[in-house]
Image (cartoon, rainbow, N blue to C red; front, side):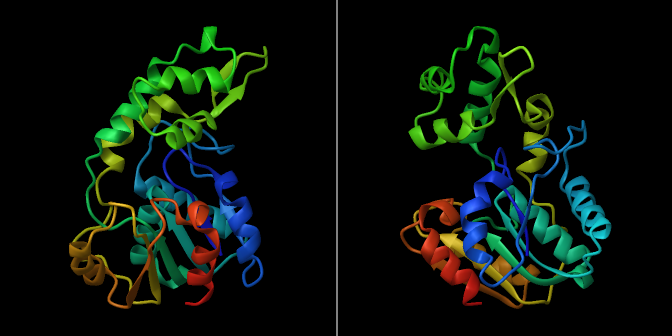
Length: 240
């Protein structure tokens, strides 16, 4: 199983859940470009990320995999499955739909990160405090500062490619799929019951692109069911 994280995330977000899923799968969690320990690049599109994943699969001699993606990673997984169905045994999409999202929250989060003065920053905790004016959700503030890392001089730097991601945000909010894109293989959409990312009316567009899709709602979860309700999430993945 190849796992693709969401925007501003990394493979580290999947270590615990990945260990649970390892009871059934050989789990490989990747860092997408401009995230985690992967290289930085000016181009940040779903087509580029899809090409990266395919190249990685080729380099590791993986002809066909179970492919799971969360949020931005889910959009990448959908595109790869539709354009290269011969490489995907099973598709799992976590709390995202094949539609455009215009998120004021994302814009506030990126504004907060771009405004942060790294030269005077003493700790991640201080960064969280500085984010309070822009980002209401304390859990999101904690998530954002996971992207801060120490530089060679002992100061702070962004591990993500913040300029490239900021520039690409309007592109990443779009759906990567064209009307004719289809994947007919086994497909599971796992949706957080407390999340607004996938609404009841999205079922039509989901089934239009993925005729074999099954949609499972994890009632107590928000946008991150793999972290918020891990046991129920793992049971949903393992159960089909």
